Amino acid sequence: MNFATTLHSWDESVALFERRGLPVSSYENLYQEEYDVHTGALSIDGHFDLDAAEPDGTGFVIDGDLDVSGAVLNTDDGCPALIVLGDLRAAAVYLEGDAKLLVRGSVHVEAFVGAMTDKLVMLHGDLVAGVTVLSAEFEPDLVEGTLHGPVLAPAYLAASYAEATAAPEAVLVPDVLRTGADEDPDDLRCFDAPGVHGGRLLRRIEAGLPVTLAGAGTGQAGGAAAGRPAEG
Image (cartoon, rainbow, N blue to C red; front, side, top):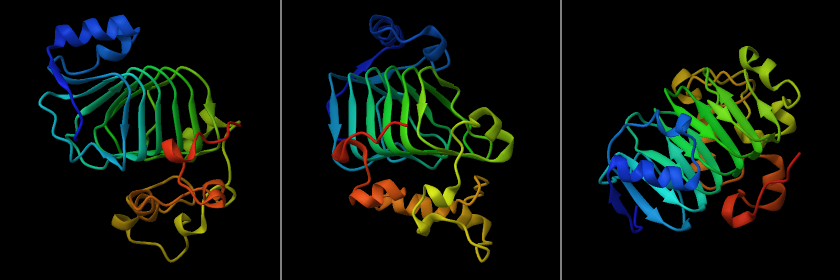
């Protein structure tokens, strides 16, 4: 990624985490290695593709707010960690590999999607999303604040989000709804979130297209460019 960073040792990174109030319970689960630190708030035009990023260390630390006009993406194993010591705003967050995402503040997105990931995902503020899609046993390790917005989750997770679960057709644009003709497990990306076609969901996010009916109504995919999704 084309932004300025300074390589910090693990001890320097821990000292920064402690100054910013990131709990030990979060950072103790990171690899105790070097991290690329960006000082201050950061805005990224387009996607922040963690799979393609090549930090000098084990991951990125953003010492401030992170605004991404596109999506934070992870679909492969082996991606760098992302630690945001302020708020994270993006069009979407899509996690499908072995992502490590720590956010000291709140997350504001049109879509927060997690599937099939051997992950560490800890959000110490609110999760404000037009939709949260949980699949293949994924759920955040921590949302310390409040989860705002509807949740689409398989039955074995739905009980934890009973007050927020919604019918997919009431939330998602028709293009990402699963139909009876959709049988290719690779294209479905093994999604078991009810009614959700994983492949088409990812392709719309990668194309910068809205995936929720609310987002389609504004003609925007949300995130930093479109402002925060409505809470509810």
